[in-house]
Amino acid sequence: MYGNAFGIYGLAALAELTKNEDVLQFAKDVFYWIEKNAADSEFNGYFQFLTREGKPLNNESDYKTKAIDATEVGYKDQNSSIHLLEAYTELYNVWKDPELYSRLKNILILIRDTMVTEKGYLNLFFDRKWNSVSFRDEPEEVRKKNYGLDHVSFGHDYETAFLMLEASHILGLENDTATLLKAKKMIDHAIDNGWDKLNGGFFDEGYYLDESSKCMIIKDTKVWWTQAEGLNALLLFSKIFPEEKKYYELFLQLWDHIKKYLIDHLYGDWYWGSLEKETFQRFEPKGSIWKGTYHTGRALMNCITMLTEKNSTFYQEHEGFKKIKNDFDKFIDHWRLIARGL
Image (cartoon, rainbow, N blue to C red; front, side, top):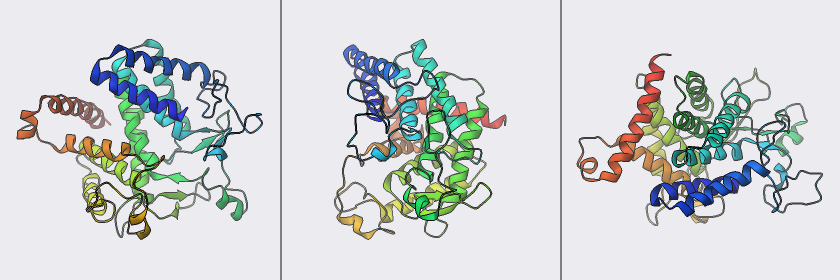
């Protein structure tokens, strides 16, 4: 389902750019396929793993997947869900369909109110009835073995905060304080618990032994995509909450970290992980199935859009960019107005 969500995301963006009805129809077809096969009509949400024929599978199924993330089979998860949220947001931008509206609103509320904890971080995996997958009560060796299914992913938290604000805005939800407050709680939790106060940047993973304990860092590396999404989120929240100086100050610190440790100034692009923690990344592949320029591209384009002044020559001379900038400003103004009323 994750792959099909990204298919919709790309097709919808291409449809907006080209106005090609065949491309838009292709996106609609994928939407209908997902809703027919992956949606759980009984308990809500979506099944992630399906056969080619569209039949959901779990650990008891005859079909056995050879996917590299096969340990996740049988669970509902936040990652495919947030990217479906993202894809449906993009599709609704070009296709104002009532069923799509309903499904987009449903998944926004599901993520916001079920997947995100009261502390402000996402539980990663759930059973079919939305009980979160946790290994806290297991022996340490079992807990560590299953960190992949049960940890705090700071990057996903503030990425999701951004995606929820986008979805609510495109849906036209008025005075949506619930989404803004939850989104703010998510980025604030990541700052308070996942920010490296010594060298800057967001750590990859944290863990709560129980809800009353302090979030401990279990993976102190700094993968490229979490830093890219951090740039976008920090700058966005500095615009929505300009009185809270921490967002812009951390944005500047993060950009310094990226320039120093992540950008390959000789050959271009970003390393997989920060050289501060993993010097060997200098010699690793720049691209793979899990490393595309999706995160970096969006983050940098959004930051350029937010930082460009309307009295600049660039804004005045580029009509296409002018529309992008004006639309993004309306998005920010929408949430800033709501923030003022909190």
